[in-house]
Image (cartoon, rainbow, N blue to C red; front, side):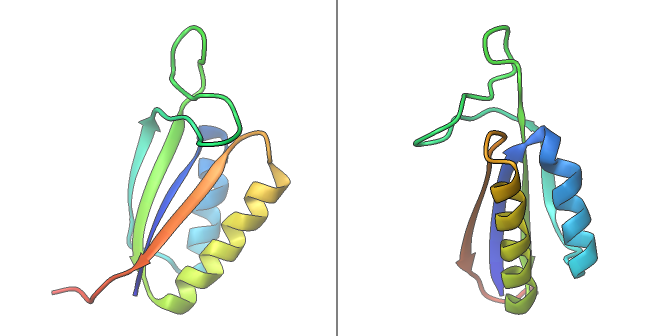
Length: 97
């Protein structure tokens, strides 16, 4: 099992959700309006007058094969939209109770 945390520009949220559904990644929690700034490139997404855009965030715990497929799909989305911002972080986790 892997936990995947995704942070993306709100403009990419529906596309990420579509890929999750297509791959059968069902269990997740999301936050529709989060603020943030990347470590190296891109503009801050702070939802204010200077930096008006916002991000969305999703965390999902899923099987390794689905996680790997989702990571590949979001990598492709990010490559196709380099100015918008999409980051994925993952780690191994134990099972559920």
